[in-house]
Image (cartoon, rainbow, N blue to C red; front, side):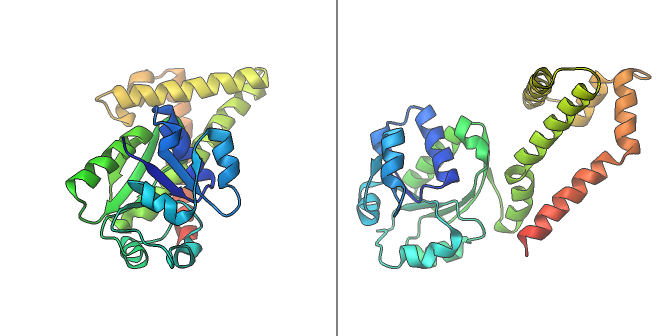
Length: 255
């Protein structure tokens, strides 16, 4: 079985580790290294705390999960031995990764927080991998949810939709729940109803051969109450509001 080594133990590293553990990857096949928190994480999750070079030596796949501006300092004294390096470092290109790690086997990824429950979506761009490393990364990606091959130029758009998108979905759920409260529902119940509605609707769309627009029309009868609500969304320029927010997200990432 593949051995995974995490350099860095921040939120995304922990989300990925949780996703791997959910898929029954043995905890002793997951190594972690970090100056301050590796030992605590090892105690919490049962994974193995190692020194950085020992982690590289003992792992089949090394996941870089520290702050992007630490890349040169972290990698300067390390020998990656042309092993498979998977990066979750925002804004760090494949070319930068190969230059700093010295390995030809590099995958730049951009996962979202839902990898922790194995329902994430992860963009990736890679060098020419060996067949063994390609299979290893495919397995890793499948454990976490869906993998999407993208040109690096499209990562900022992906990040706005998939990376920031969960926060926007949570906001929509909150807005639905608040609308329920405003019309007489108890707050906890309203949130439960809104959450399950979004969860079920997303699953319905995922399993359907129809588009999201077609499913809207399936739910909304002509002249009915649902159509009245959709028409009001249109009157309030709902699509433009979402587009404006995504553009603001992308623009901020380019600052």
